[in-house]
Length: 205
Ligand code: SF4
Image (cartoon, rainbow, N blue to C red):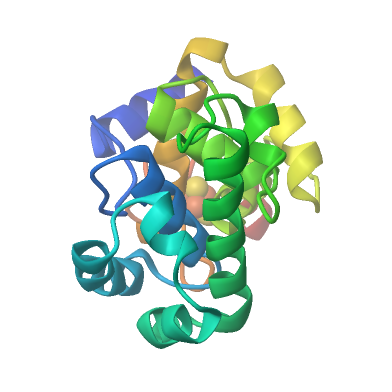
């Protein structure tokens, strides 16, 4: 793994999410909105949204239609609005108004799955986690880290390969690497320093 990690350290020395937020509740909302949507679009929406609504209490009082109008451009706005309002209520009723701080408790919130919980746990609470998104799945496959077609198995494979203390950092680097270098279409193989050891590239040659 050393060569991969060194290269990613070179490309992204301090990797983090590109989502903008100022507390863990805002992070949770931003992550929910980012499903099937770009971080850039989410940031444009939350810039205004978080000025108007800041707490789980604020969001819990919104009607679904009110929230739909605010987040419309993020796509899947009906499902996302419903989920944000329900989760806000659950956080108030079951977690004293605070975002829960373990993956299991996060997953107990309606509509939050393994990936979302892992992102919040890792970025919001500094925990060790791997959240497999489309970029991580693709990069893992191309580099031969995992042949898994599903995110759960890929997460398990990566956890065996990467030292636990590096899970979160490497995860963020893989997301950025997949987003900007090892893109789905036209990956930047010619300038990639991993091309000599990349399964995908070697199979092409
Ligand atoms: S050589 Fe190409 S496919 Fe392989 S990791 Fe680099 S960019 Fe991705």
